[in-house]
Amino acid sequence: MVIHLRALILSVPLLLSACAAAPPAQQSNAVLFEGARLIIGNERPPIENAAFVVANGAFTEVGRAGEVTAPEGAARVSLAGKTVMPAIIDAHGHMGYRRGVSFLVENYTRENLIDHLQRQAYHGVAAFMSMGTERDLGYALRDELRAQPQPGVALFLSAGRGLAMPSGGPAPPLRDSPYGVSTPEEARAAVRELAAKKIDRYVKIWVDDREGQVKKLTPDLYTAAIDEAHTLGLKTVTHTQDREDVKAILRAGIDGLAHPPWRLGQEVDDELVGLFRERPHVFVLLTLWGTRNQIFGPRPAWIDDPLLRETFTEEDIRLLENPKIPADAPAKWRSGVVPRGVAKLKAAGVRFGLGDDAGATNGAQYFGFAAHLEMASMVEAGLTPAEAITIATRNSAEILGLDRLGTVEAGKSADFIVLDANPLENIHNTRRINVVYLRGEAVDREALRAKWTAVRATQ
Ligand SMILES: [Zn+2]
Image (tube, rainbow, N blue to C red; front, side, top):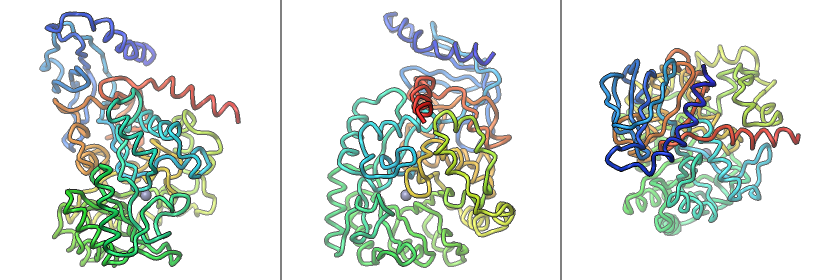
């Protein structure tokens, strides 16, 4: 049954090309998908036995089966027994530096950047925000892919280079990528240069001393950067760990946090809650990867997920185990600072987004897979599966200003995931991927898998 359905779905591009010569009045490139449980991406209950039409890369009609009329000549795809959710939007990661277990500036090549975007597409991630560690090649590739999107390649967004103190930004090998600024005028000049490069909405700043190892951006510098960004119509997002620094930077006008404010184990206190309440537009990317081991323990069950074997080497996978984490860590974690922080911010109405920091020190090389673990971590942190999915889709699209992505609704780009099992029952089912569609086209996951398993075979 599954093989039959796959064959049917894979034949859709053929149908599309076979119909391309038909008269336009028939709208014959339309495809009617029917019979799935449809998660729209907005926390509303799913539509059971849904139907939707995709034409010219977009959803044109969405509703219940029987209520949606297929245009004449439309191909039909049965999705009976499947669940459909919007494609995921990852609002925080770092492209280019990781290549398997190697983590080097030399890896930042066109081929490797495209490989990372293919890994996103393979896992149903439609767009990925590279957060402040770009090199010149990255800007050029982003512009090229924007002008001419490639099939099976996720949308590449970039915050450009970001700002930090000289030699004070992200951990090596990302460290030399941001502008090192020492005066307010240098901070403003860096922001102006980023605006000229047409970065995607956000200026990234680092305000973190990395446990005393580097200098953190001082208030006069980040205040100047935030002010200049706002003057130019840009927004700002910060990597800040310490709670008191988070408070200061909220007062200075930051638009979002790239990490939650409890990374050093500090509780979310009433003063912080009050600052968020006064600033309802400020978002927090939950980025729970850093606490992943405490959430799931030293050898999580998902290490045995066949999906990991489809794209990663045994060496990659071994790194996910951490024998130093005690077996009782998950139980301790569940009563700890992270779920409490999530609950307090949620009660204060804070908008959460998904960021997995893939490609950095914590997020490692698990491009695509890590976005699914973030959703599972959110549920472990006390959110519902519907909330986690909405954070990963609609919220993150809104945060990045992607108004054609994030939900399955008429008029949006047809970026969606067909799942073999229902993630509202078990969030780990977001990884039971049957087909991924980006811009209305099925991603050729088989070809991508063949590329990655060939690498595995040489080990
Ligand atoms: Zn990061």
